[in-house]
Length: 168
Image (tube, rainbow, N blue to C red; front, side, top):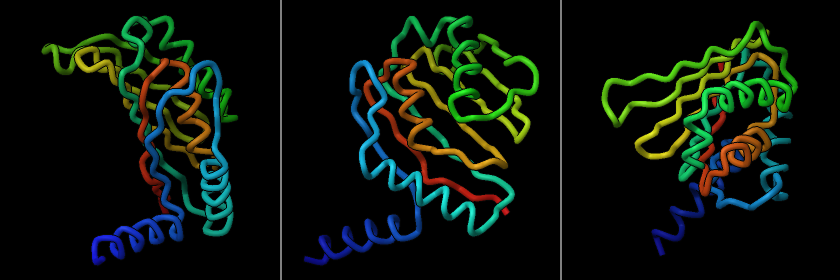
């Protein structure tokens, strides 16, 4: 009984404080937003408007991504360009895409795109076929919609979206 109460308490706490966290399985072929992800995104956008923070940050982790795609520097570069457009930001210069790593565990592409309102970074782990993306912007965006876009782009089986952090 206590475990159920605590579970309900934490679920209520996260929803009432507009924290966004999700794990989603792949839906082939298109971006599928659930009512809850749309609602959570809208709550984030409303809260951003009300609290007027300096910016917002979200981390997106993708698992079991397509190995060929995450190792292709041209594909990763195009992803950075497309993500900027998708979240309605404006790029500042070209994306930086570098493939490096001196041990198998950390080897892979790292990418960075400056945007007029901050930056997007992404790290692609060859060893685990995972992708780790951080978006920080002083302009609000829909974090779950961005995460779904990323998952589809790299054909990932699973994703996790961190709680949104507002920076003041």
